Length: 253
Image 1: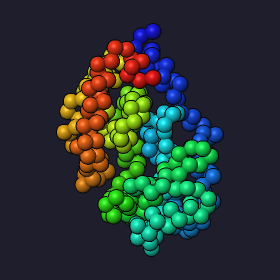
Image 2: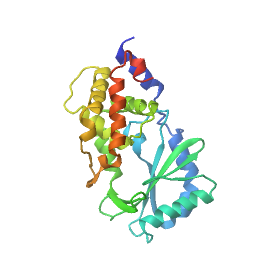
Image 3: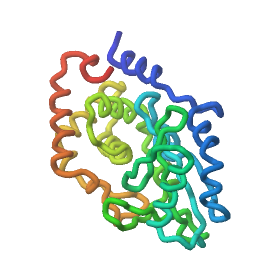
């Protein structure tokens, strides 16, 4: 079996169900009564975002991201929006976890991240999100994120990189990783999936840790600041060790 066939076999195993019976839609349907009661007339939309929408999700180790869009007229502050959502899902019987811009919980045995945002105005899809760790806020545009990653056309390489990350227990936020893969393969015309994945690992072991990545929807939001020097160093060290692997089975499985 060639290296490319090996990686493609893993990606086939990890293919995500995109049908209407997928866990994403089931989780949304289960949560909608709670979210509707919480958001009331200010709730505009609840839709999948993150890896599922970008085509970079794997069946194993993937959180379901549901973006919750609230009207610009929502009277509550961003912090109040975040905290009242936490209370609402708690009272509904879930065991939520406060994260940075999201609230994590398990629904039907699946990990779900709820990301509440207030639309800035009716003329754009820009939203303001509460940043719990900094007790501040940030502007973002989920549709811009989705379009940026899809336009990068590196879904297969990113899915392999996410499996590699998860199997080594690395703290490497998915959007940051997606941007890093796109950058690693910029102008890369290598034939073969395995060659391109190898180039990604070389980048992670090399220039990645000092590279600056900004949010394509908000240049004031520096994505690369989401990890500390030590956390970036752990990614670099893991990639360096992986480049010494004798077989692709030692790279990802």
